[in-house]
Length: 64
Image (cartoon, rainbow, N blue to C red):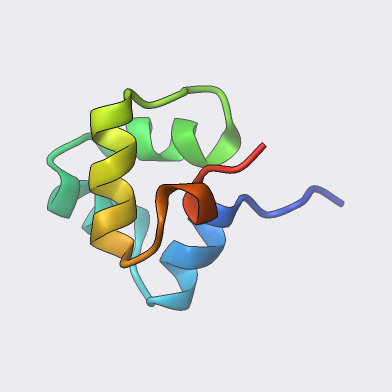
């Protein structure tokens, strides 16, 4: 069983689909999916936008 990323858990807790959150952020669903799986590390700017959209601190969305 794989652990759910904080980004995915927070997105799901707000009943957002990957497509909806990606649209709000102005990125592709593919990019968001890669961030959720850990295969893409967003820029600081994008990480801050994601955190702001989810209403959480960056550290809560992207922790190691």
